[in-house]
Length: 416
Ligand SMILES: Nc1ncnc2c1ncn2[C@@H]1O[C@H](COP(=O)(O)OP(=O)(O)OP(=O)(O)O)[C@@H](O)[C@H]1O
Ligand SMILES: [Mg+2]
Image (cartoon, rainbow, N blue to C red; front, side, top):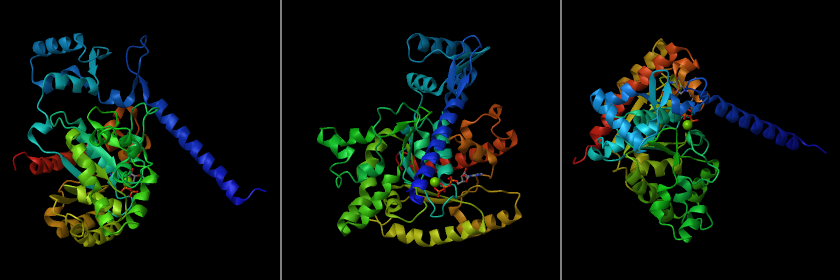
């Protein structure tokens, strides 16, 4: 006899099917025809949207047209980069070729002058814009060719799908391992990570192999999965020494290997004060706290701020690794007098701990998220939202990015 649970099974099946359909639809929409009609070449929309015109590339290198042309022709001939996409009279170079060309021409890298930085994005309040801020800022860093940094996003929110949505590589043969899998590997001898170690792989090499590729050559991602939630149960099952070891796992066992490969490491966190967040805090150099200037968010951020310093002091490192902590107003509608009032309250109470730029409220963020993208990844011509809304979003994230990266560079200057 059919019970309500059987019928709920069907609901779940249908919902999963809808999800799969949506993913297939997004994938299909992402394939676009870019070259002359008769060639009928299809290029991934995300790759296409970030292509650089030859002139833009020339300006980046500061070379004369003739010298630049010679260099780029040589690079194509010797196989350093592929042929550009030809669109009418425009030559377009994808970001992977741009990166190879930059390496070939030995352009200065972030790592030459700055140390690596681990930035945790957190706020216990759900839906404040943590994931949007993480991905938007990490993408901005990766797109900044003058910065020339290697960027990584670690998703540590078991209930979120930010990290999974960013994966942009053939994943049929991939082994999905998360930061939590590594953190728990000594307690889970049957797990993938421990099994690889058994087979003789070196720990550091294994950790470096975990991140997935995204649509940008210098942005990788370590996704999270609902099974990462077990970290909390395992933590509470340990004695004091075991708990302390777990809190240090990210900082001591995982991050050092990742710092060898990445310059800017962003960590997206869950909306709870939980052992996962404490392990992140233990590993963070900087904490960025997105806050929406609305009354409810203000009061929950007030609660978060009330516990934050003591939470850090109770960590194994006593919070002494933390070098920077600031609030960032996000999803801010400057036209709302109510929001301006709350924003002013934030200004008064946070003083030097508030970034003076803000991410504005814009439907472009929602439109971008609907196709698993950031506002940097959409073009006006796609008409996913109004051009005005996209401009509003981009202008504000640009300002935030510049302020943020300047502060990070001050923090990370080598020799300080
Ligand atoms: N500046 C913005 N303008 C308009 N909508 C936004 C903006 N920033 C975020 N949003 C929307 O708000 C919702 C919540 O954002 P997001 O997922 O980044 O928050 P979160 O803090 O990571 O949430 P959670 O606590 O559930 O992890 C999303 O639907 C997102 O598209
Ligand atoms: Mg989130």
